[in-house]
Length: 113
Length: 112
Image (cartoon, rainbow over all chains, first blue to last red):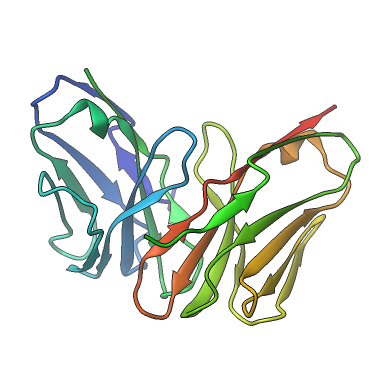
């Protein structure tokens, strides 16, 4: 399967714990995006990478969130000291050009108890 | 915060009916508009990428139009089928950055 993959698919954690999600984009795509989606809302942009460089980050993103793409391939999204409000679906997408279609992964559903 | 609005929020139609949805967005700094279909338990999939004012795109029974001057796009589905049931999302990208701004989606249910 050469699509975008995300792991884990589901994560349940207790408030205050740290969690890390992984995204493996389509191999020839140099652009990678992270989104958060809550019930009844569309995906909300979190951050964007072009190769290994994090070029854009939502101003709404808390300092508890950090993302990396160390070798320009897979990416990780870490949430520190999770809060109940962080419960959401975290989506990763990749694309090859700035306005080209995005290919989405299946998402990681986070539940913070 | 930039507002991309979609209407209606949800829609129930009978199989065979034709339907359409609207995506409204600020017209300044437009770069591209995407339409995605998101079926339950699946990943969002791209339907159309539209960049030029007056663009019309078609894929089977689904088509879309774009008006960048007045800031709207329409998605049409002709002869809806149960497999068209999904949430349809539009996403705007501006020429000032790389961020995609998604609407809240239109949830379509096609009743057999």
